[in-house]
Length: 406
Image 1 (tube, rainbow, N blue to C red):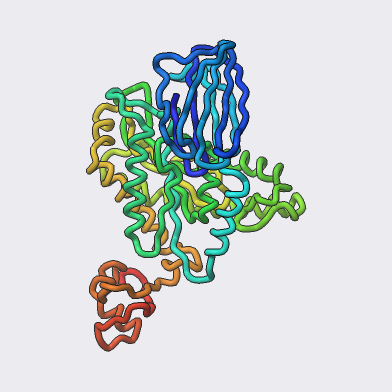
Image 2 (image 1 turned 30 degrees about the vertical axis):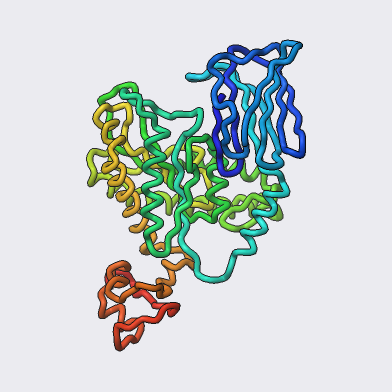
């Protein structure tokens, strides 16, 4: 038995020695999910019994007189279960998977709260950082058994920490732990948080261990065309947006034109961000390709969010595998990606963001010298731009920041 807690659901996986059937039903006061599996017994390797993870408070099993197995999941609160079986694949055999989702009522309450918190004030730039793979999907595995899902999560967390330190920027970690998220759901998480950029972090693998170097990908034109066809076929879904414009009430031609304009602008922005990142990664060592690559990766297919996929190195290469496990190299990779992000948004900050307005609200401990260094402007330019005669600042006042380098 294996458990993972994702932000919106908890996954319980039972490994079985063969195909099985199952039934499940819920009980209330207290909340429980009962799973009956006919003609099955627990093996000695059954793990996590009684373990609390996510929505699961504990797990109990009992062998029925009929020879059936009853599994009871004690739950934190009311859930909406979804179950399915999987055939053998990769390193796993037959599996019974149970996903426990928050109920619709609790989801609506969360959405209502987030909408109520929205204001017309300037906002931070949102960078969605996606660590590839996770959970049952380890990704590529190096000769030293290093798993891609582990190192990319570590790099993603380091990048998020660096973004958090940047004035006017806010990170969103798409995957925060060791669990799997569907590819399109990763895009939806970024869109839910209003992301201005989507960065997917990976580590490449190849049968030839000599191959090495980092790469940066954006969506290919062929991938964009297939995605356009998918969106146009589903445009009746009012939740689908293209560049902030609904498609459901547009005729086919207008919808296609709007989506094409949105996709073209998004790909152009993606190429520029990717170029900046690749240039920064070249300072760390060999790159696998000297230019930005294009592919049809699903996580790059958002028509309204510039998206890049970074293959940080070849984990199949022994020397690069060692580097990927090194904390200092992980930090260097994160800093290179951040420089690429900052280089792009220095001249392409979206309207309504702090970066576009170049404003800073004075906080306790702020000094003009510190702020001048932080925003990469000279002290005299900062004072002159705000008409300041002294270095005195008042907490709560808004300081206008001149263009970078001024």
